[in-house]
Image 1 (cartoon, rainbow, N blue to C red):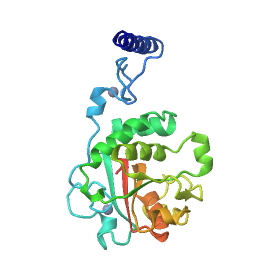
Image 2 (cartoon, rainbow, N blue to C red):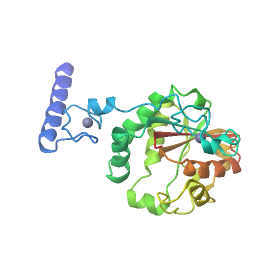
Image 3 (cartoon, rainbow, N blue to C red):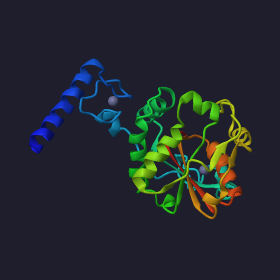
Image 4 (tube, rainbow, N blue to C red):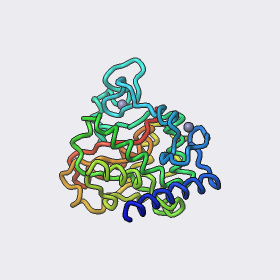
Amino acid sequence: MLRFNSNLLSFLRKAGKCFLHVWFPRVCFACQTDLPYDESQPLCAACRQQLTLPGPLICQRCGVELKSGGAHCFSCRGSKGEQFKCKCIRSAFVFNNSSRALVHALKYQGADYVASFMGQEMARCYARLPELSSAQVVVPVPLYPKRRRKRGYNQSELLARAFAAQTGLVLDTQCLIRTRDTCSQTQLGRRERLENMNGAFVCVTPQTINKKIVLLIDDVATTGATLEGCARALRQAGAKRVLAYTFAREN
Ligand SMILES: [Zn+2]
Ligand SMILES: [Zn+2]
């Protein structure tokens, strides 16, 4: 009887999925081809294959790709990155068609459910990053409250949740807040971006990160200015060390 019921249940589940698929076909976020009705991922198999790990030629501090090799990029070179509070930035994937499609779906298309796939992928790639393995507390980059209300969620928090659930690391979504709605940074240079982030973040519960190694989580790293702004606030509040991990790396 039990067996019959579970068979019936699985049949009904499949039939339901099939029915939904006919009426609301799901498409791959990157290439827009129809996904099979039993596909649970947001990308088709071919686009998933294109999610690319960053190569070995990256800046040891900020993770930017260095086409001609070397240990540090131009801006980290001076003191081997010692001038920065965020000691190491790594990303699961390079910014390409596939990773960009997921980031856009999450940020601009309200597709909050892609975060679980992205967070799981981040956890899978994390195992290859010994530079980040000392992390003790996971902290998402916060959004300004008004922006968060508009989007309905903080995409970095969803990623951090899925990532922490997979890795078993402690998650702290309360300790860091954004006190200023920093203007869009796309028009600003590297130095201006860093200045723009001055005092934009505050740690409101220093006791939870005191003497801890914090791992900041964000969707994309571009110049690392946002991560640096967060790291300054966390270090000021007593964090022992701040590292960062993002889903994608834009160079
Ligand atoms: Zn595709
Ligand atoms: Zn660098």
